[in-house]
View 1 (cartoon, rainbow, N blue to C red):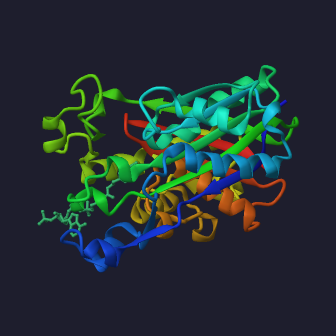
View 2: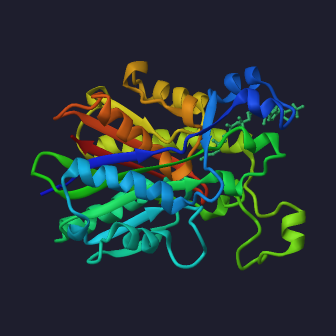
View 3: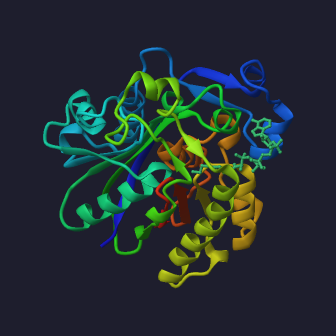
Length: 324
Ligand SMILES: CC(C)(COP(=O)(O)OP(=O)(O)OC[C@H]1O[C@@H](n2cnc3c(N)ncnc32)[C@H](O)[C@@H]1OP(=O)(O)O)[C@@H](O)C(=O)NCCC(=O)NCCS
């Protein structure tokens, strides 16, 4: 028996930051950003709005769609690298706010792969007896973005997506998940300061070491290769062909990455889910955000095969194949 996605939800904050707005903040242009990334605008939290605020909205929607009460959740997993505070976990804050008193709760740290990692963990728990697991990807990337660094600040956005996992059937649900990591490449995307290596200090702040650093060009090449590999792995493991995939939902990092991956996989443009142009790279939130949009706009129909593939800091890469 497979576990299945019983309901989805998502939330993005109201504030829109356009490429034109960024032109006034760093030396860049709308043309450069659109050509190199495909991003036109992104959402940013309002002052005082934190990761759990976004997660709460997405979670409530997912519970409603699944017709599941908060009291019937056994586990809450929040995939995030921008939680409200280092302690406690954002999942615990959410557990309280949802009134999910029976649920265990913890955060999952796997950067942009966080949602697929969390989905994989949730899948195992449901298969081994849990009733419902709430899986959320929620990020306030604007909190770890250096708004004076044009190499990174044009890329990221804030948002959240959620799914409720429960019992599926023999033929539908999560067919497989595949997870990978290569810590040798941990310096491709990282935040050097603010943790135990370089605890928060005036120096860390002054040198902007509490913000994301990235080797963009090298990351780009590895992202394409890794997502392609993870996608092939998912298809092969289930004895299906790439042509049977109805919708491909990759991590929304860069339009050129998405197009290169789907081209290498031989997937037609209409099978590729894209919302990057409106939300930018929302890290762990990107796949569940796109998934919820696909469900609500009826791009996913019952019986269809949906392929998820992610890539992110760590480095990590992962895939999941879902029969809807
Ligand atoms: C970041 C990224 C968009 C840069 O695009 P690129 O084509 O690789 O561009 P490069 O880094 O080679 O930079 C080209 C030039 O543009 C400049 N540039 C960088 N950011 C710019 C910006 N926002 N506006 C204008 N120019 C910019 C660079 O300084 C460089 O100038 P130079 O040639 O004078 O040195 C691209 O590498 C990328 O998306 N990488 C993957 C990042 C990612 O997805 N990370 C998260 C994975 S989860």
